[in-house]
Every structure is written in structure tokens, then in C-alpha cells.
Length: 247
Image 1 (cartoon, helix red, strand yellow):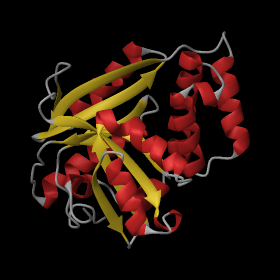
Image 2 (image 1 turned 135 degrees about the vertical axis):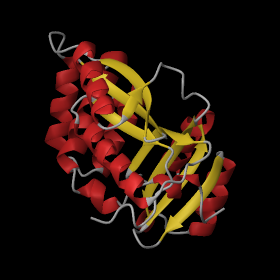
Image 3 (image 1 turned 30 degrees about the vertical axis):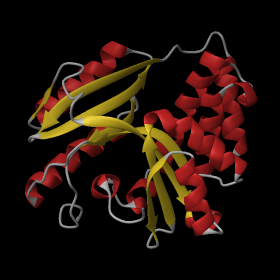
């Protein structure tokens, strides 16, 4: 099952993500806060919180930051967050945004402004339902998998659809159907294998090709969305090339 898959055609270079560590921390803190408000501060009885804490550890977030985020979520007088999504197109490329905000009017205004300024258009909710499908994506440091043959057999039995071994970045990426996400998380826990990140992500059913110039323009817009404090995740259906990602 190893090898090339849809996920590998759209992911950015790991180094580009590492450069935005503080932004990643901010997103995880919001996720922890929402998880606590939805299901309480005990990770043993709150799967969403347990997953958020696991992702925080995978991102090397200090323990004190995690505890403060849990405390923030337990504060009844703290800001109330809403989870909203936005869909649209930029230069013919489908873009799907997942946001967490304490002011929906501010968020939609910012999102619309970016779409409009850079040749995009904000669509209606559901307009990209046929473009993306939700998949479980698990990023596991290669060093955490001591026996690859046994790991593959176990994880396939739990519902894995694809396993990609990236020796360049020392990472194993496992993908699954949305309904098998929990099963794979439990299997990883039973195998004592820690993930760097585990999420339900929106993966394109098919990808779109673009020339390098257009691709760079789309990536610039994606970076602007990712820099917005209210945006948690940005998904697109553009097939990335090395030329697009050159400075």
C-alpha cells in the first residue's frame, strides 16, 4: 500500500509548516478549548480533547501551554467559539476553509476580502461537496514504527486505505475512510505508537493541474488564508509541483 496517493500530490513541504509553529500552536489551543467546552476537561472521557492533546504533543507544544488551554476551555466566562466553513474558487482551483471564531461577521468579511482581492470568488456552503471527501490522515514519525511489516498488517486490519512511507521527511502517512478514524486511533494507542498529527481532513476526489505562475498565485492566497487567526485549516484541489513552490 505504500507509494504515491492523492494526499502526496497536495501537501506542502514539511519545512514550510515548521516555519509557522506559533500559528500551529494557536490553532491547537483553539481546538483544545472547544474540545473542553464540548466534552469536559478529562481527556479519558473526551475523545476530541484526547486527540487535540495528542496533536499538541506531536507539535512539541510545552505541557504548560496545554494545561493553560484546558483551563481556558474550562473558564465559563471565556470567549465562545463557533466552527464555520467557507468554500470558493481561486483561479479555477477549489478552496475549502475550516474556521474557528468568536466573531463570525469578522471572519466572513476577512475571507470574502481575500477571495475578492486575489481573483477568487466565495461560493455557497455545499458547493464543493462533490470536490472533497473527508478522510482520516495520520502522520507518524518513522522512528515510532519499529516493525513496518507488523504495523502495516495491524493498521490495515483497523481500516487503513493507504500507507505512504516518506523516507525524505522520516514520516509515515496513513489515510482512512472517515468512519474508520476512531478505529485507527484506538489501534495506534494499543500499539503505543504516537502520531505527530491525526485529523479528519478534506482530500480532493480529483486534483486540478495548473501552470507554475497560476500555482504560485493560488499558493499566495492559501498562505493569506492560513495567516488569518480565525482559519484553522485550508484545503485545495491543486496538484502541486516543485516549480510552484520555488521562491
